[in-house]
Image 1: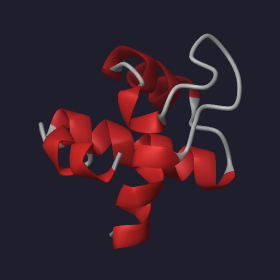
Image 2: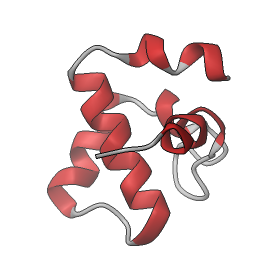
Image 3: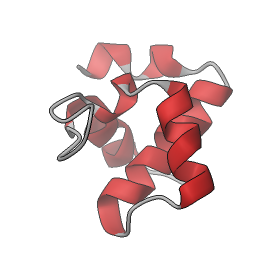
Image 4: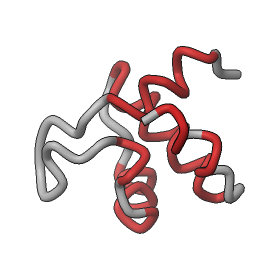
Length: 69
């Protein structure tokens, strides 16, 4: 389960490395998140947010995050 803070973090936390460095987690492409899911999400908060972002994208709920940006 997630908390309200998790949604705020999705709208503000940026990717710290790689091709999408500096991009907000919720704005990462679904294909990129799926690739990480197959390889294994990073440990810690980043991995948790990436997994949540993927779940939100799969369910088509990205509109929940846009007002928080």
